[in-house]
Length: 253
Image (cartoon, rainbow, N blue to C red):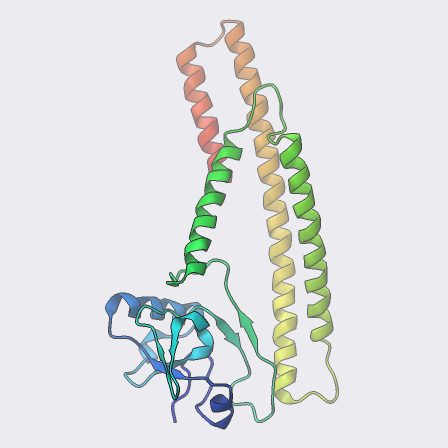
């Protein structure tokens, strides 16, 4: 009886009721490498894969399937990308969690993936524009409009983070009636919650560092212009320094 190499789901009555199918690794080297990347994303060893290894349909987008009356086929270009968190070999029903990573090394051949790539490219252009938007006459690199938009986004993100954090804390509370599998899951939630808190603090510190560096760069540009106006520095030198400041600003982003 085959089981999913990723989440350990077996082909049985429950999977049949849910219309879950199992699919072998493709022979096409290009597509197969993308499947292997997904295996690595789940912290699994690719050298354990055999010719009988399969991945269940829960890890694919529904658009990747061609449905017939009695069966359904997986498209040749389909790539798994949905991460399923579930208790393997559990004797009782345990909740499952599906996660779609926002940044994945796999290229999912769907309209959604294409839109995501366009969105990433757009964000990169925006970052470049913001980094080059440091004006000499002002220290703050954002105009009033973008500042208001950024404030709104920050408020929404903070609200979402608070709700997620409270959900993690509530879900990780132990209960006397919990089964061993459920207790194991709660310990995992608690550990992930702590890790998320640590990373959030690190991200906050890095953001503060970036803001301070931008202010310093803007101040240095202003000083350079003052030196230029007093003929204490030539044009070639100021251009070199300005380019260096711009490159440093891009690195900080």
